Picture (cartoon, rainbow, N blue to C red):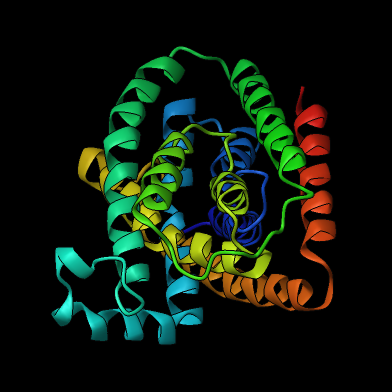
Length: 272
C-alpha cells in the first residue's frame, strides 16, 4: 500500500463521512473526488462511491444502536394486522421502504452502469452537477415545511420515501436530502425526519455496497486502502451525525433546511 493510496483512501473516507448526511449527494461527491484524483473510469468511480457507504452504515448503526435494538426487540411480535402500530411502525417503515428502494434502485443501478460507462470524466462531473441542482431545488421547496404533526410512519410514507430513495442511486441525487424532504412534506418534524432518514440509510447503503461487491468485487481499490477508507468514513460519519443532530436541537429546522438547500444549490452550480 503506497502513500498515495493511503491519501486517496483517507480523502474518500472523509468526503463520504461528511457528505452522506448532507443534501449534496455522497455518491456524487465521492465520485467527483475519485474521478479528479485518480484515472479510474466513471463506472468504477460510481461503484467505489457506493462501496464506501459501508463505513457510514457503521456510523448510523452505532449512533442509533438503541433505536435498532428497540425495533429488533419488537420484531418477534410483528404481524401484518399491526404492522404500523406504535410498537412496530418504525420497523415496518424500514422494511417496506427498503423493499421499495430495491424495486426502484436495482434496475436503475444496472441501467446507470451502462449509461455512464461511455462518459468522459468531465462530462460525468457535469452530469453530477445537473443532478445536484435538482436536489437543491427539492431542498428549497421543502425548506419552510416543518409541521411536526406525525408521530409514527404509515404504509404510504414507506412507499413514497422508499421509492424516492431508490432514485438516489443516481450520482448527484442526495439520499438524505431526498428522503428528509419527502418526510417533511409528509408532515414529520425536522428532527424526526432526519432520524428516520438516517435509520433508513442503513439497509439502503448496505444493499448498495453489497450489490457492488457481488457484481465486481472491490471496485478499483486494494483491500488495505479499502479498509482505511471505511474506517475513516465510519469515524467521520459518526461525528457528523452527532454534530448535525446537535445543530437541529438548537436551531429551527426550517433555517437548517434553508442552509442545507442553499449548500446543495451552490455546490451544484459550482460543478457546472
